Length: 195
Image 1 (tube, one colour):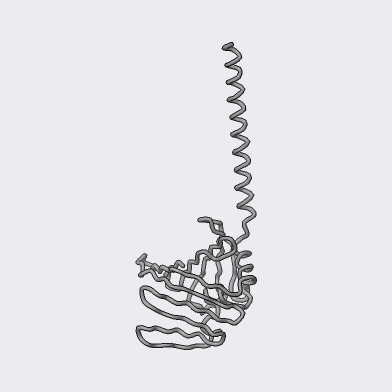
Image 2 (cartoon, one colour):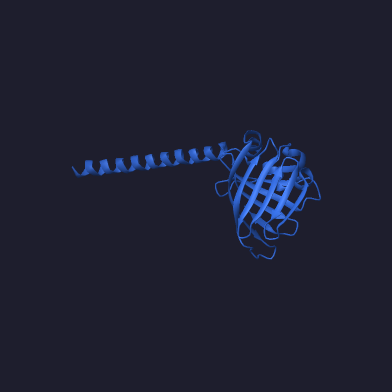
């Protein structure tokens, strides 16, 4: 009787080991397949530009200087209508600021100074990070797009402006489920802004 019990336990151990190994292979292949089927960041950006014509939401942004000194975090709200060339970027805290585009002009309003400035929309936005998300022209005309490695559950890409007078070096964009989830803008002075 002891012999059959020992044989039964040995069989059970082998069966459990086989089952665990098979389960591990299945889980690994499922994770690998999920990573491979996630669309690259550049594909998600092009789909976002083509399919999302208007949206609104909330944002926070943090700017860190080239020396590593963080500025006060800003938060606010945004909205855009791509077809009409309209967008609104409203900073609520810590200092109010409003940037509006009406399809022809960009208006920047500073309530603390009770001052507004207005410029032509194309001159103001041009090849800026705003043009990437809110613009209606072809993204490849103004930016070189390069997919980057997935990280933090996001599919990343780097958009580098083709023009020289743009004020920033690049913007890294992280997409999740077809929507931009994080932007990191590196400006010409080495400041890094995360939105």
